[in-house]
Image (cartoon, rainbow, N blue to C red; front, side, top):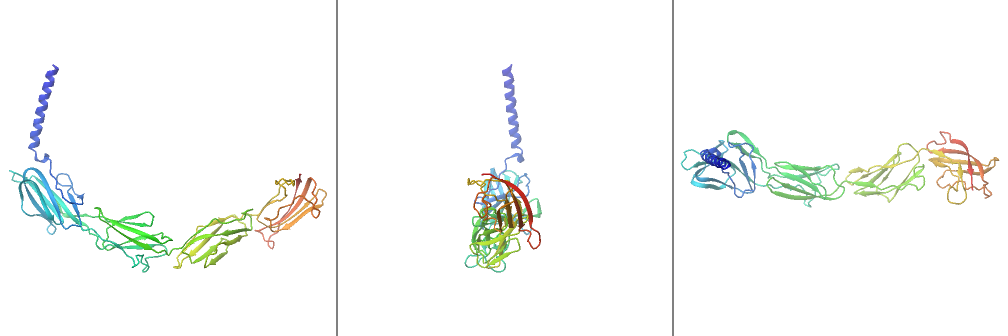
Length: 446
């Protein structure tokens, strides 16, 4: 029973295949269609319209050639009839002799434009298939940079400015757009643009790319001109591999400067007065203007190795120090600010000190910040003065070493009392009273 079913299945399968072959042979639209090809073409793109078969016709591209070729192959003996597109009348006109009873037809030395080939199988009276292709004779292009005889960016007419540099590319021979048509709608003009891509690369920097079609010239702008002489490299290439290159030297007119890390006092670097030493690294500079953020500024024609400035007035916000540089072409640049802190006046007194020469807490010295003047009296429990200091250079003052003044004797262990008066750098004595007097006590241990 199983063998019988298998036999019936094989018979039905063979009958079905035979029917399919008959149907396909008798249905022209289901035959495999040929295709126009172009020997020696440098590229191709699909037309923007769909043809009667639902496909897109082809635009074949021939680089820097006057003519091209087309070929078509169709199985069996056929008559191939050729047509050329007439741009004035917007129709396809018969072109040359027919190719009769052949499988392949070809034409060489075809000029730019549209071509149609109809295929009539032997024995038929009307064409069965029709094929269209367009030939685009890509003339290539030339471009060159606008520069002087020394190969440098032109320095007149506003091409080399402080805030940007303009590079001009002469591109007089760039090909205009190629026109073609949908064979089923010959009233509508279709455009194919062979895009030209331009790139600019400054030295070892990144490429700047733009894709444009221009007829006369193209401008490139560098909105961040370099402060060093730089070779700029340009290239242009189209969609089909034609490429041109050129370069130009940019002689800088842009100044530049970097402020190095400032040198601050080793002790109390944020306590007024704060003397600071500045150095900077300049490029292409003829004049320097230092601004210290406190109303003072210094102008130099030639930069010295070191610029010093002292900050006296404490404040909550940092001082911002900048240097503005100018080139011989009057281009200017201002450095990034360097911040300097000057803290408000403060006074903090400890309650213990141990003058035993162990290099730890051997001096009684209050922690002071931004004090312009300082005065201290130290007394024993009996009210005898054992130490006095007055001065305005607290960075060099060591403090009390635990010896009784004018005798050199070591003070005994115990409790001592102090009185302090101080003037801050933010309160001149002519305008505001001094800080204090402050009173307190501390212990001396040995």
